[in-house]
Length: 127
Image (cartoon, rainbow, N blue to C red; front, side):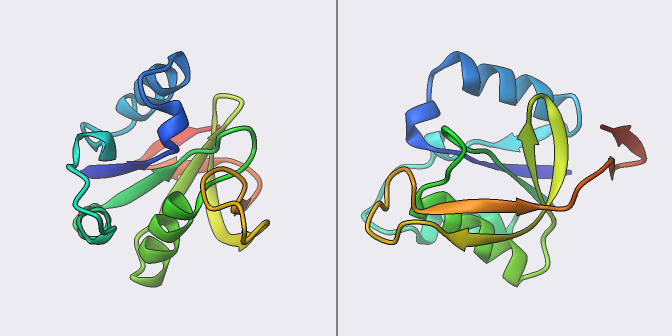
C-alpha cells in the first residue's frame, strides 16, 4: 500500500516532518514524499503521484494548509482516494477541504475538515 504524504514545504526537514513520517510509516510501508519530486513549474507530477497512491496523508502547518496541499487533497477526494490527517498524534479521516484565505496560497489558504472518531486503516485500529 502506497501513501502520498501531502505537507507544507515549511515542514520539510523539520522535527514535525520526522514525527509525521514515523507515525505514517507505522501504518503503511511505502510513503511518497513530495519533497523528492522535482519541481517542474507545474503541480501535475504531484497530482499524478497522488492518483497513483492508495491513500493520502495530508498534514497541517499551524492548523492550515497551503494551496498545493489543498489541491492534492481535493484531487485525491475527487478520484475516490481516502485522505487522512494527523492531529495531536491521532489519525482522522478527512471529509473535505475549505478555502480560508484565497490570497494566502502558501500557508493559510485552506482548512482540513475531518470526521471525528477512530480510524481503521488496513485492519489496524488507530485512534
